[in-house]
Length: 329
Image (cartoon, rainbow, N blue to C red; front, side, top):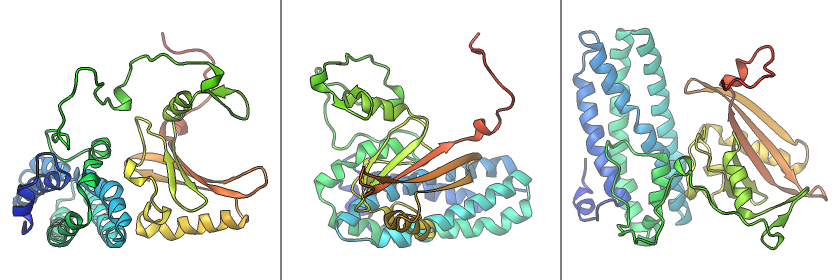
C-alpha cells in the first residue's frame, strides 16, 4: 500500500490526489479498528466505527462524478466501468451490514464484516498502484485545478475541509464562493427586455431562468441528442450527487454499470420514437425516490435529447385528506 505516496507527498496542500491519500489514512485506521471490533462486547463502539466508514460513499461519488469523467476525456474509460462496479459491490455489502445492524444480528455482522474490510483494502490497493499513478500521468495541472468546487459539492470523509486548490488569496473586491444552499444575498435583477429571452409564454433573464431551475424541488439532468450531458440543476437537496465534471460526459458513463443497459434502452426507444417516457420508484437511503425520463422533441418532432428527473416523494406519499388553509401559525 501507498507505493505512490512519495510522489503524492510532494504535491501542494489541497491537491485532489493528496486529499485522496489523506482519506486513505483515515480509512486504514477505521478498517483496523473494525477488524479489532467486537460487536458482541461493545456494539455501540463497533456501530460508531462502521457509520464513520460508510462516509466512504463521498469518496466513491467524487471518483465517479469528478475523477472518472476527466479520465474519459483523456481516453481512459476503464475506471468508469470496472471500478464503478467495484464501488457498487461495496455499497451492497454496506447495505447488507446496515440491515444486520438494525437487527443487532451480531452473528451475521461478524460473518460478513471481513468481506467489506477486505474489499475496501483491495480497492485501495488498486487506487494506489494503478488509478492514482495513471491519473497523475494523464491529467494536466489545469485539469486538477478544476476539481475543488465539484469536490466540495459532494464532500469529503475528512473532519476538516481540505485547503482550496489551487491556493489563492481572496482579494477584498472579490466575492468569495458561497454554496447555493447558503446564498441568501439579494441581487438586483434587470427586467429590461434587452436582457431577456422570449420563451413559450413570457420573458425571463438568464439569471431568472437559472434561479427557477435551482429552486425546483426536483433533480434535472438534460442529455442532448448526441448522448452528452449538457445541463443539471444545482438544487440544495439533490437526491443523487452531481458535479461539473459530468458536463460533456456520455450518458453511458453516468450510471452504475448494472443499470446502464436499461438507460441505453430507454434512450434508443426515445430516438426511435416508440416511447416518450419511462418511470421508476425506488427506496434509496430511507427515502422513496420517483425517477422519470422524458423524450425531448422539437416542433417538427425531431429528437433533441432526454431529461431525467428525480424527486424525493417520501412526504408526498404520506399526504391524506385535504389542507386548504395555511399552517404557518
